[in-house]
Amino acid sequence: MVLKDIPADARPREKLLAHGPASLADAELIALLLRTGMKGLSVLQLAQQMLDHFGGLQGLLHAEPKQLKGIKGLGPAKRAEIAAVIELARRALTRELNQHPVFDAPSKVKNYLQLQLGALEHEVFAVLFLDAQTRLIKLEEMFRGTLTQAAVYPREVLKRALDLQASAVIFAHNHPSGAAEPSRADELLTQTLKSALALVDIRVLDHLVVGRNEVISFAERGLL
Image: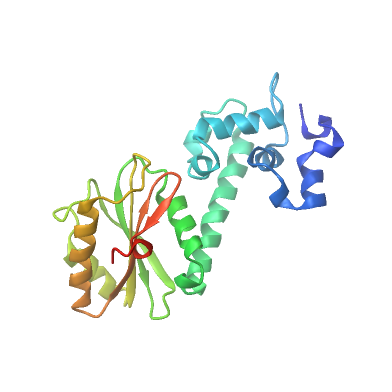
């Protein structure tokens, strides 16, 4: 079944034009990209199948092109369109953070980090280096593996911050298990790094722990 075969008042495109994109369910938005289903599966069913496969919209937004290849009914053209939309979302958020202070839109920082780190199968420690106006200079993955004070080297973070002439930083790391709850080791590491950076007057604004469906802020919890 293609979109034109769906009753007019239930077609995603007509609903979007009449009521705006927020009126559409996740599956309906994806169906607009897909346009057609496959034999025995309507386009809306295929869209919902994709969401189920990746564990919802958040998982789909983290999907790599090679992962999309595993979905029956997604040819090269459809995979390319979906990958392009995901990349546009990443770029739009990056440019927003490049141009405006991060505290103007803390939710966008969380969304940006979920797109960048949320679906990784290995643990990474990343740093958002910020200028004097707290605009994003660069996001860099600094370390991989289980995070401990032995695995994350303050001197490397300090050196990179000085190289980029950063005035402030936000730390971020992901929990591949999916749960975003910070550990005691995360707290100790944050304090170690904060003390090291304070020696050269570089502020630590936050440490964000990225799970699959949520991002927890140390600053919001009073842990900094």
